Image (cartoon, each protein chain N blue to C red):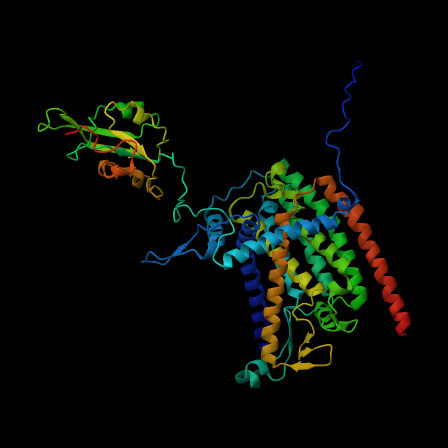
Length: 186
Length: 382
């Protein structure tokens, strides 16, 4: 069986313009026609109150179609009495690659089982990279991420911190995977 | 005498105000139109907050032009250690001023009779009439070319005095490109001059209010469609805009001949470019689109081809003409921006080949055909 010798083509991208394209002007006019048609279509949409572009005006408008598995916000879980489950062990703050978690521990003599609790628990969302390592590091299942987005956009960096009260203020019933309060908790 | 002074002061104020407004608005139109054409939203973040309230006026990003101007005014005014600082300082003005001067001969309206327009001043003005044109010169079109050709000196000066090789390359490109296309610009208009038999722009506009073939308005674009296309292409090249923006090709020459300019001096170059868009649009309107007149319109009103005459009062005519002129200019500006956002940039050798091997012969052919046609028509009519 003879093998047909492979012959490389001289030019694989030989220009394929016909005489019509070479005339230049008609193709230019066609291009201008396309762009002006898009322009008129989008202007028509704009005048009738629709948007031609798919862009969302971000701070004013929020997309409702974030992915179901998007985890954009932290929450602190609570004990049945409403105090945070966090024991201020600082493991999340230690593991955090962006160093955005700040915890200040305090002593609670009324609760001998959990004497240490966070008096301050703050996250700087201007630097958070949403990697979820804090959730993995937590020994008490005290910090979780929920499918929401924090109210981030702001002109000042100091406004992009979220403090303990806001982290504790969440709607636990929405997390069906881990029902709250945990079953068996008295 | 004083009356003349007042009228021309008003004209000059109108012209400068109009050009500056166009320069400012066009920066916005360019961004916004380009955005809409490519399914984007475009600049919409600059706003003006009414003092003591939280009411922010965004107005579709119209204030971005103001924000740009403010930024250019307060930026550091960098100066390179150039051996020719005088040329360096004067270059932006040399590029900017002639652009404004071109407008002096462009008519933006028909005849103005101030005494009839403002009855209380009728006694003072008497029966003086003025054409709505800053300088009524017989050599109108020649003045346009003379001043239009001056812009290039500014570009060359800027490139030469910046002590920067990118600037120098950009200036060289600008020089050869603008000289090439200047020629084509002139050649395309020779056909029009043959037909109208004058270079006075006001006269050209007046002749365009007639009809040809019984029903078509005698616009330049009807008589010389070929020349109109060539003129538009050459004018865009003359203005150094995409697809002919080789002198300032960002990917190759940073910013071309104004690389070393910053702050308001750079702003002057940009502003000159945007005003030149309006100037080109005004020239095209005047030469090819019937100037300040609507089809079948003249200083007395409308004369439709069927023999219907619709007379209009002087005030209505003046207002219509000014508004129509502005509208046509704006549409042509928009067309140039459409071209800028649609076509890709040429390579440099393609630019010059396009000028000398494609447009130059076409312009010559157009001129020859026009000359023969005009001659034949004269023979027939004689």
